[in-house]
Each structure stands twice: as C-alpha cells, then as structure tokens.
Length: 86
Image (cartoon, rainbow, N blue to C red; front, side):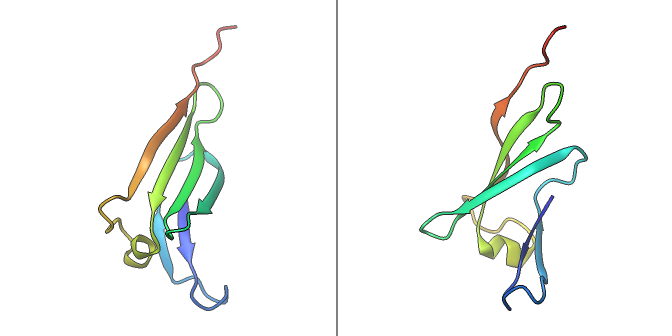
C-alpha cells in the first residue's frame, strides 16, 4: 500500500511513500489533523486473525519517499484479532 501526493490537483502523482509492501493489505482509510499530520489506517491479513495498523506521517515524508519526520511511524498496531476456533 502506497501513499501518493499530487501538487497539481491530481493531474500527476510524482511523490509516494510505501506504507506496507506485504500482500493481504486492505481497507485503507485516513484523515488529516489540523496540524497537517496524516493518520492512515489499513488491515493486514483481515481474515483469520489479522491486524488493524496505523501509519502516522506528514507530507514531508511523502515528498522525501521515506520517513523524515521524527514522530512519523508505520505499522503501529491498533488491534489484533485472534483466530476463531471452529
């Protein structure tokens, strides 16, 4: 899963930051806080005991293509469901 940034109203998307390179990621959602920080949430291995993860990033991170803001982070675990026994 990758975050992209456009500076020309969506005509081009030259800036990107890889958030999660693994297979089985889904259901992204996000918001921008008043201070400009971006909070992005996604699932990993949704079925069978998966995770809900948070990425806390800035536009500067996306522009650089890597985390450059000291308080930015990827793979912060919000929740981990346990497999259900059948």
